Image (cartoon, rainbow, N blue to C red; front, side):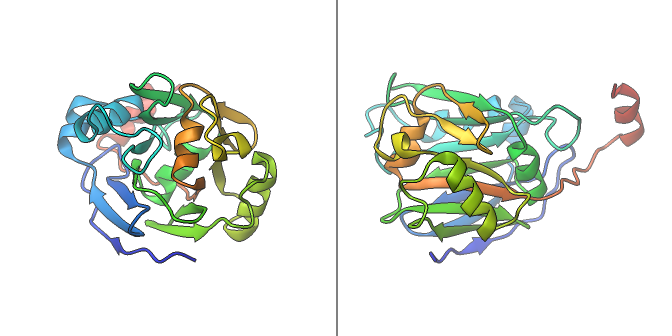
Length: 232
């Protein structure tokens, strides 16, 4: 198992989990940051968070299939707040276009990510050996993925759930992503595909097999009665 260092900060805003985890795969360190006010003021979550972060932190000319590229995984604005609002947005510089690219995917991942305590994950650097991230209870662990590297996405989901939680939502790549195929998908829970931009290859270039998350959201709302009246 890899060793990670975790720093905490207290959530301070309504409508969000209030935290972003920054994971450096090269060093094994995890930094927990408060979701920045500028991000919330400019965007509502999801795609806005992905482009807001990546546009500030990435520059043209980097090696796209290296630790220099970054992956942002962000929960949709209403994830954990409203039914059927569980889209997850994944972004990085695409190995196909060379531009910041996003792909969206359904299932439970964004709900679980918010439940684990995070609005987004920022993944940078690269692992020396295959690994995956386990996100739960306000923590992020970098775990060994040696026994699942090379497996299909469905088989990988099954084994990761055995190691983490049977109810975990698992975002994973298959052999195509591992072998840096530039049209490789990212699959969630074995059923839903993040298929645009070849971002599965970016996961593979970082030797990141999967990200698994579990938690039940408890998102603070400024006007709970008003929110419920507006809900269908």
